[in-house]
Length: 284
Image (cartoon, rainbow, N blue to C red):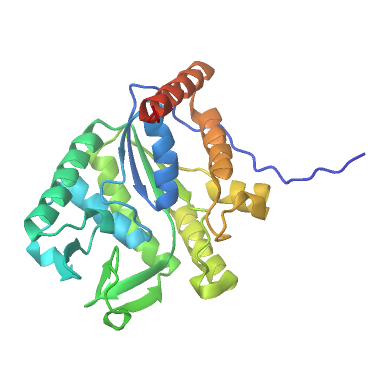
């Protein structure tokens, strides 16, 4: 008898069902971008990473606070470097040539996300790393290629992550009592500190989420599916750190099975095919 060649990660049905009337807000690391893009292509109503890609729990929490309060950033939140204005709270995709343009693009998305969260039935939060960069004593979402000596780099503790997120989750439940919150940890491997450092970081995130877990909060094992079930470098790109599109497709399929009916899955597939055709640019 041939022994099993993988260790399947069981994914139980999630305590919510998604359809095309569901409002979804997604925040976090670039793995949130991948699943968010598939939700968008599938025709779901999603506000995807309104601050751009965010990696650490502190920056994601700060972004959520601004979205809940509809709190704009100001000129004091900006820095100018190499001919561009950058927001300390946003990904570099929000950087612009003038501070007025930077403030406009950042704040318009904050207002848009505030409206989306009011109507949302699901909030997806993806933690990427427990490592943070501090500038003048405050955690920044992105260093924007400023000189490294301007920053202090450190790893957050489990207690620190929990202390930030516990009151935030209470606030979210108070404002949006019907909102489902889904946590996941990105399987992207951050290898700057080596394999051991990456594991310490991911373990911090997993332990923190476990302490935050309540009836109103759910965990989806995207990290475990890629790192434990697939566990093969053919599922990683040339950098050996980012999952391939095939690996993301497998996680996407497991996510669909956990929270969508077969009819919704089929329609999402048709919507994605139509979206792909519409983006196609013919040569002639």
